[in-house]
Length: 119
Image 1 (cartoon, one colour):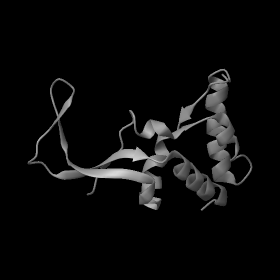
Image 2 (tube, rainbow, N blue to C red):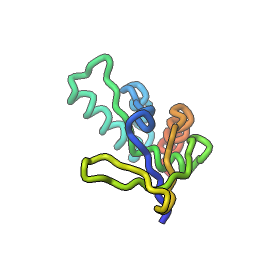
Image 3 (cartoon, rainbow, N blue to C red):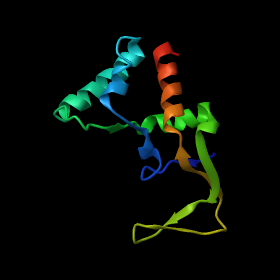
Image 4 (tube, rainbow, N blue to C red):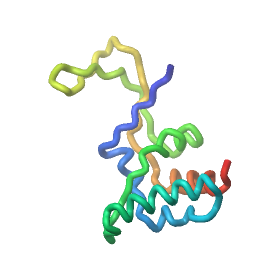
């Protein structure tokens, strides 16, 4: 099966959302309300700090499937995990896709459009 590796550090972390963005979903439909309630709950649980930011990791893969142009992807050989809890590359292994970057604005605009539509 094809595999897309979406690294959190320096890649998917670009999908940080402040509470104002999440509040745009309030009241549109049950799916949008669900995402809004999750975000609002995390925000309140954190004490409502003015610099609050939540990274919505989960929207990266669906965004890339919906619109591959929102991401920069390269084909690499699958990493091998080592005993020292790092990884190395072996050119004889199978290939996978690796996400190098994702366009935050394109991703959120499309995700919010789909969520607000409820489809």
